[in-house]
Image (tube, rainbow, N blue to C red; front, side):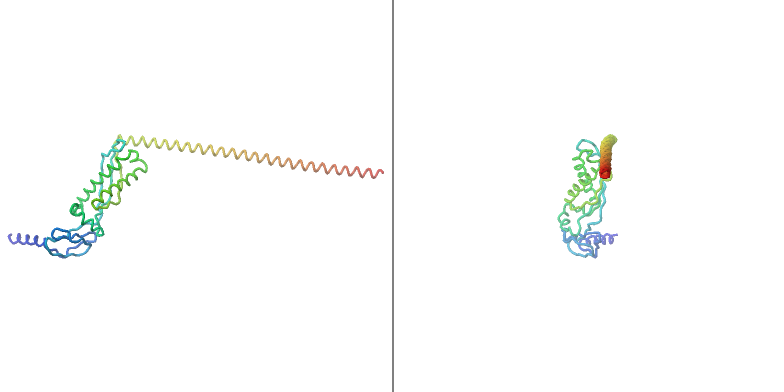
Length: 266
């Protein structure tokens, strides 16, 4: 027993002074420590070191999904709504080694522990939700394209807050707005009013279109009637001219015949 305890203590002490061929996987960033201070930040590979209090810690690079629901957010017009927000969290990469180094003393738990990362971002998401929902009216939060605008606001605000921790937030969505019975009734009333307004506007446009079509039809009928009258007038004029020419020709024949008869009588 004493031997086992001694070996365990020796192994523990050895682990504080040396590590051998410790892997950093493709989805990790390694943080090497010597004497309790960051010595290097490294990418995937196998690492060995020996010295005073040497250690290699791993910062995961895979997406950490989060989902937050807050049922008690007050809009600018004092309506109570609930909002669900989801997204993915990403820690700093090897290309952002300075972020890891500069933030380690304050946020190492965020870089090492997924649960701590989620808890921190979920708190920031709640803050972003309250800011974005609170500065808009109920209608401008939940109706039509308003949810897209709300999502964009939460995305921007959450990303801004997460930057302070060296975190990146992607794929933010607002999959659902949670409404109580009273607020749902308000939404139904607003939706009904909008539908009635849109229907009235459509009816107005349809009536105006029909009136314009009727006017166009009447103008067309008038134009056709005028064209018919003009054509008939032209035909009457042509017939009258032909009649005059016929009478003139007949008169000329009669005059010629009279002249010939006078000559014959002499």
